[in-house]
Image (cartoon, rainbow, N blue to C red; front, side):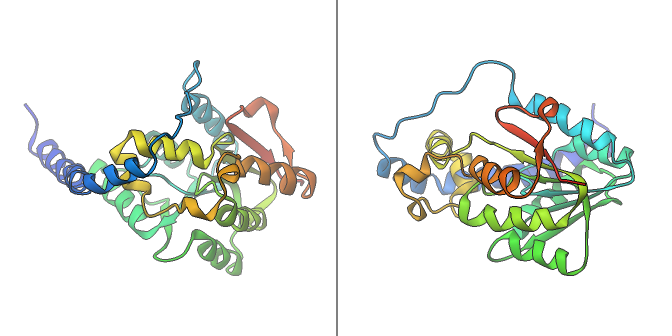
Length: 254
């Protein structure tokens, strides 16, 4: 039998998650229209082998181990918090800043409150309009600096090119820039949105596929930016022992 406090937490979580599920169902006719507009789209097949999230988390933990008491910025925080990673951040007394849309950050705050996670070292930098580049520019104006910056945002050229330029300026010399989904493409996202109502609902207002040609939708924008801007022109080096095909760890020149 659940204790009173556990029961309260359960119903708070049920209210939050249940509300999201209800919204998904209400929007399902629009999802069906999206599917009809993309009839004939070819789905990308998933690669076999270890879940890439497992290897990524090992890499992140290794880097965070080395910055106890330091500062960690995450650009693009996703639909749900990484609870175990945030617990680890707290144990290492690392100052964490999550940067994303206001609605996403507020949802994370609510989830953390339900889990009763210690948030004294956790803060959020949010944008209600536009993109997180404005928020990052304001951080730069304040003279903020970070030991590790993790970019897992929009993954597209027009939005993440300025964000990565700003991340470079916010990163301390010798610091690490983490880039996720190096093989990600807009075509891959479209496939996920066609498969899953929840994926379509979360991303439906965030992406405009018409901004890119069909050929550009099949290109990995983040890998292109990393190769050309960071490695070729900004003296970043790739930490091979911590990197994988889907995940790159780049070290800024000291």
